[in-house]
Image 1 (spheres, rainbow, N blue to C red):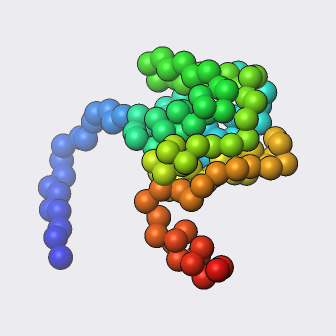
Image 2 (image 1 turned 135 degrees about the horizontal axis):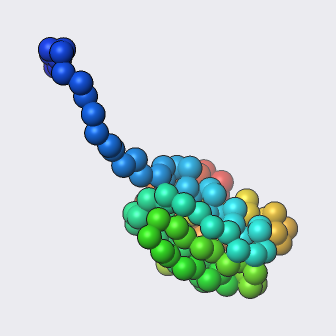
Length: 127
């Protein structure tokens, strides 16, 4: 087992920037479509999954504006409940949008999410 040996006597100082959590950010981004207005989010990580989530929101009718450490989502013109297959397949967690779409429209249309074999196993067992 690895170990760290720390010899005391010197004060530790400094700053560390902690990025936002993907697993916390994605459901919050999805929930913005329920707002019917402008939502400002801070400290969202700049990663593939959040970028794909923005693309899905744009397809649904949202306007996205990114500034330094802030994302502004205008969901006042959301007018669709269907997510295209090509965007759904970009990330597994795209399915979290189902709850927000069901909450807003009472229905949602989407394909299997991407990169997840469990969906293929489940669909095969349902036949």
